[in-house]
Image (cartoon, rainbow, N blue to C red):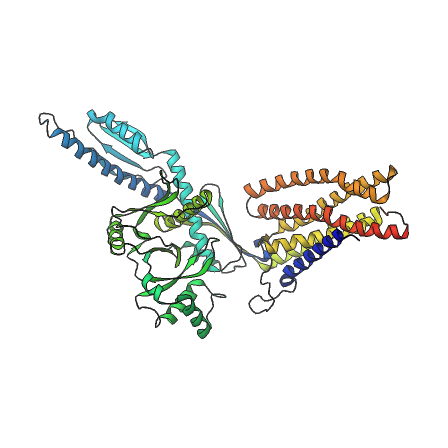
Length: 581
């Protein structure tokens, strides 16, 4: 055999060993907390396979729209007062002209999804006031008009934007809570425009899950104690405490671990400080420690809104936030007292960002810069940070519209029947291929078995969730792979009928069939990508498995089969035998 064949053989062997290595903890049912096996990851099973909690939550927008309109009314009052002061300065030089009546902004009326405010003004100033609304308050629409009075509501586009932000915020709050709950591979998705679907595989305590999800996120602004951090070797101190107290974040809620750690660290750090950890780029809680001043002068209760803006000079995104009057006063004092230091933005005890305070920030408004880097990545980070900030600033009431528990017996029954159906279907295919194509059919069967092995291993490596439709996707992958083998074998038969030698016929068969196989699999891949993008829940599970199966099918049908055929042909040439196909 040639050197290239041995290289390909080694690559295939290494792939099989790696796949078996990744699947061993799942197949052997190892306890990942106690086992010494180096690979500590099992296949994640979906809600339909292992049971759990299924919740549908509705987002109540009535209070959200009312609060948003109240903030718009407050901004309108400030702008009208500012304009009146400018007019007053101009009229001081011309005392014979009468000062127009100042517009009066009424309170918010209505409790539905379209609350209104009424603004009274001097009829002579109607056009000026209307231009002001169109220029600076595009979020408001003119819902009705009387002489000297406008009836204003939120514009339809702005209501859609608010609704989208509110649902994203709700999902972020829920995701933070579920991460705290320690659920593996939870599924949190939007349903329509005002609902959130939460699937928690393996969770049986529905009341605890509901209580956890329904709580409001805690947002806090805390000063980083950089001076003490420079004096103390915080990572080493934490490692020493964990070793002495046998403390680990594994196997318990992170908040409980953090509370115990701070209790044990109390004699080693200043009394007014506390330890917190950073949230890494992947979203997981990292081991980067911060030493924070424990008292939070400003919290999420003081935040009104947060949004992503673009710097017109650098074209870099930043997060702009607005505080209420009380929060503005406290924030100005806090930033003024700690200019040059860092201010940590802490959500549920985890540091999401720690920007440097450049100057005293007054007026209740501020911005968080994100440095420099890839534009798309920074924009995504800014949007995520804005959602995190709004998660504590704009809480929406979540109503539990539907709840049900999927029992483990149903999940076990699904696994058994789904696996049996896939096994029977695959066996029928194997038997047919083996009989119809003889020795070449056995080569195809071996490649199909490797295909299933690689699909399962890929699910573990990618930390994807196997669902019942995913099992159907594996069965479909076997069918697609058989189709590829049939195309190759029929091409080889055609070349043999034309009088070609066995090795030359095999080479032409693989070569001519490759384009057809590639076209068919690319078409399937497009369909799977559409399902993945627009599908939800089980549909996504099917799409993920199908996409992985398409990749492994190309690998096994083209690479593995050709490798084994080369070995088979070498033995035929030594024995002067004929190709069995």
